[in-house]
Length: 318
Image (cartoon, rainbow, N blue to C red; front, side, top):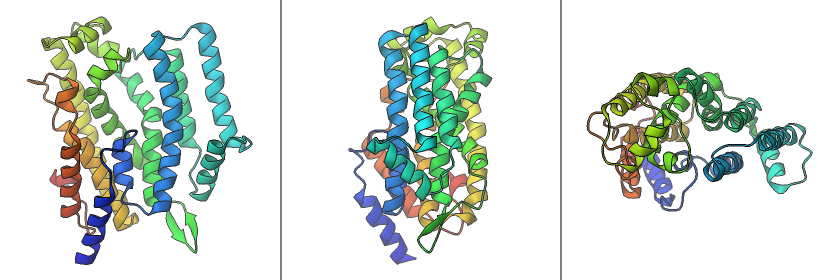
């Protein structure tokens, strides 16, 4: 047990918390994997991040897509997916991605779900209902979460990887939606300044707000009571998915090796530490309040490593 703990500490000490920028929680957690699986994760997330930023950056600069742009960007996303399906593109990044998919037996449905969410972004300006947002999160967030869970659960046999012994999609959904709800509250101010909004119109409207109000809230110190109620509703929904995430981690726990069990607890705790900072009653919901420092993230991961026990998950202790 002591020797194993020392091995985890050595892996922890290799993590450059300052350097990891894109998908930091996922890549910090994946740092406890073997090198081959970690490389698979970075390949996958680098590719999805490039597509996601292409869409978000356009919205930041131009607010919305023209009809011609909608047609062009939709075609780009579909061609992107077709290249992966057919494995015919000579681009080095596409080749690396398709080799990763084949080597690690990663199904195509996460990428297909991700592509659908990107098309939604192209053709919609925000979300009319909370349910529409939850459905959207089933692609935008479940896609990367499912790849993470899949890579945790695959089994190695004579140098070949076998699929997980559990339903990856079912396992990933609560984890992904919990993290996405936390993510949009944490990034509220940054998203508003980048002309991005993830709060549903129906929730805003019933609390006497509209989208224009959100930009004013992001810029000012005064927080109207209606917005606190909006945050309270999203925070309560995140709590439901936090509990579901804990339950799912316990369900798949016996089917995941110790290093991958630890990575599940690390990523859960990194999102949990943001969730714990959200104060619907007194919070300012500004970036500086909700984003943990690098030092705080490092300490939380170290705490998780020190409390880790392979026999059972510590999820419900937090």
